[in-house]
Amino acid sequence: MEILILAQKDLKAGLGHYNRSRLLYEYFKKKYPVKYYTFKKNLFNKKTYIYDKKNKRVEDFFSKRVKQKCLIISDEISFPKNLINKIKKNDICSISPKGNLNKFAKLIYTRTKIIGKKSISTNISSNINNFLPGSKLKKIKKKNYFKHLRKKKLLIGISMGGYDNNNYTLAILKLLFKLNNNLSLHILLNKRNYSQFKKIKNYIHKKKINAKLYDMKKNTWTIFKKCTLVLLSGGITAFESVFVGIPSINIINDPQKKMLTSYLEKKKITKIFKIHNKYKILNLINNYFINKKLLFEEKKKLDKFAAKIKLDPYKRLENLLLKKKLIYN
Image 1 (cartoon, helix red, strand yellow):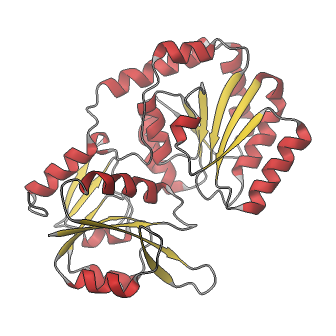
Image 2 (tube, helix red, strand yellow; image 1 turned 90 degrees about the horizontal axis):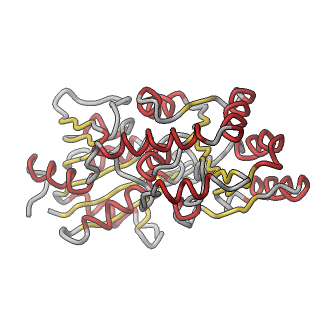
């Protein structure tokens, strides 16, 4: 049976679903016949189009594929109804905790509890061990982290997601400007969003902020590997920071994203704020600068938590699909 991996890639979803599914595709293609597709809504005509891995439109070809018996592994939050009707008779495995396809899925495989609708007959595997990253992860050793922590200026990473529509990145920059002399910044953003990128670049130049800008095409944790703290928008990247071993502050205004990231906050391994909690965010960062031992304690908590988890999510998913007879060796 062929596997079709289907990921959302548009303004509403950001790049997390796309990146996570792409890594899943790289794993499964070594053992199984598998195709990779993305879908996104056109901003002008509001229609949804299907693309292959070369970013070529393939609606007709995809429609023929799904008429045959196949397993669809989906990662999305707003798959349109007209396309759902084309694929819902196939076996579906969702790796999104709030996907539109969840109520048609035979299996939901996620890192946290399910938020969206689901069928009574759906098998659910919801566990932190299931966490599927959106970037290749490389653990930061304590000795390397401590070396970076001893530097006079704290290096902070900032990533507000692939599509930062409200330009929280700029809002955070204006906030951190008050600590400008004490900080260096690595900022990860989507340079294709030119208007926002230009505003950020101009502000950095005007205020002479010590910051470097990086495009989303590069691996997040290669860019942030020397950072002692990261400011994130929650979601996949927040979970990644735990397993990489860099303390994070998550600035979230999406209630569903907050629910997903709250798992980490309950475990006391990250902190969550809204964008209007400016003074709380500023005070916390300032405390970290005054007493860097606080950050090292946060780092130790992350490492202790991650050490208890056997993170092999691709193999876990494969075994579960085999067990449920959704794929065969």
